[in-house]
Image (cartoon, rainbow, N blue to C red; front, top):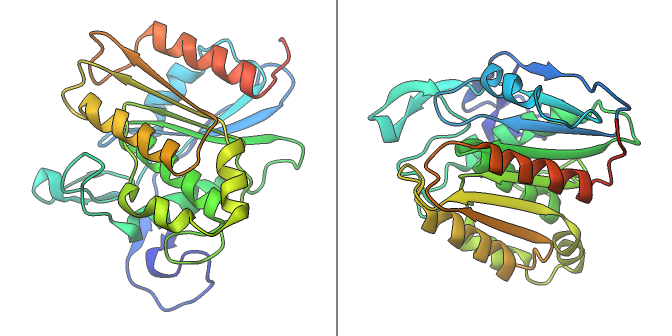
Length: 255
């Protein structure tokens, strides 16, 4: 599936850059289906890596959708192509923002969620660049629009970000000002962010600053967890925390 980055959600045929997304992997719920979460992998990875992990979690009421990002030239690798949700010159919240890529990725996520049943709770989560895309999707939901101004169509009820950062953090607070609806959505959206103190790929300070930027913009239902000695990977202690948090915030029933 491909999206045109210049006209995401607009229906326009005037094209700029097209992004060809890779294969999507689905982990179906083993119990009663109560929630669907799109989970986004990190830079250079693919959806199957995380679908294998998510399938082992004791969350029988969640359906996981694990797409694969487009293969594109990535500036941080000197233009070498790999799977990436958007282009990045640096992995931090200070990197120049690739709004085209971010909007295309957020629209792909919204499209994957748009066919879920009306009574199902919807969420986005991810690792590293996938976490950055999940956080960007959260801002699109709260603001009611993508970065290009086109309407965001999905009602998100939960966000999880592991070892990531917040794109467009410098402009978020200003974009939030003056909108009571955005403030209401931000205050009620549950967000869990986790980061390792030993992360040498996306340093801990970027995760901490991202949480602070979201909080100052009015995201009050935010939980930030840090892990001593954790690098740029996940551990059972972290996945256990994610499971407990999702069961609580989504009010999931037992298996």
